[in-house]
Length: 222
Image 1 (cartoon, rainbow, N blue to C red):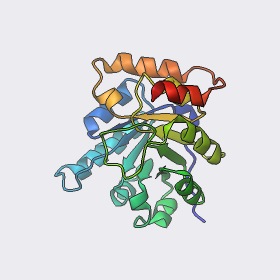
Image 2: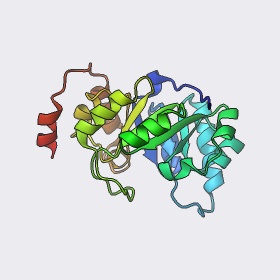
Image 3: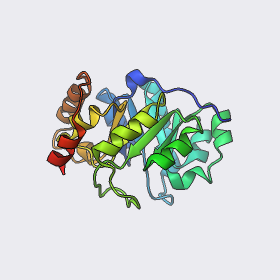
Image 4: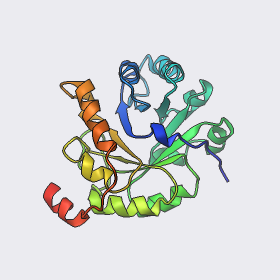
């Protein structure tokens, strides 16, 4: 049985996913407390340097910085956290990650995947993709709000983050499903004013939960 550290849920609200360490530095300076470095090109010349700097920024700002995919480099440089997709779970050395005391987040795309990886006792579960997204080639269909809410319940006590096509127009509806965090990509990296966009997201995530009529919201958003 694996044992991964718990995340700090007080820091687990808005969760930007970015592809360059410069974004990590800029967002942590603006008060973001959880962020992920997701570099798709494994042959990128400065890959290891970017990971090193991201980890260092996380320590400096006392933030939860997750490294996507590159678990060996993350262990080597003592990262706070690692995020793995479904295709990486089978090949990564989960025992080595556990032994290193590194937080682990795992992607799920439906209830079957969720229940399977929940048994691994990860630090959090990513539920997605909620809406269509062009940032990653997804083999699965968008979950939508109803499935997201159901999977949130299946996750039980494991912290959750909703991901996939989420922007300010749908963030409130996503938040009301009960997830612990909302991951965003283009909503931040393509924002006209990043600081203002962060403030708007944080305002939404500060709202109390309310009973959400998932069916009507789904029809409105669809």
